[in-house]
Image (cartoon, rainbow, N blue to C red; front, side, top):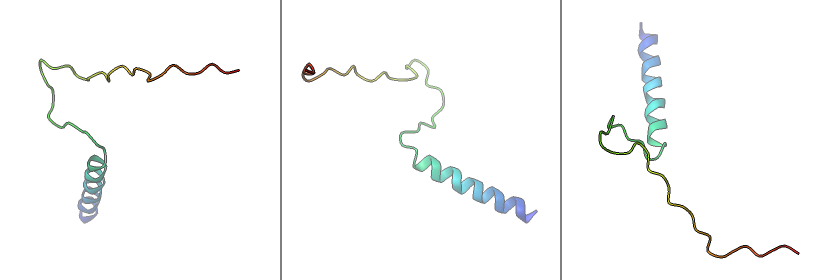
Length: 53
């Protein structure tokens, strides 16, 4: 029985570590009325690339 408890503690610690290192993670659930994902802005090139000789 104690092995199950130790395994759960280790699993929970690994899960919390991975979630903390994951970046922008929203654990709030479903958001009604909002888009699920925001599309990144289209990249506009600063200058046209020079033609290669």
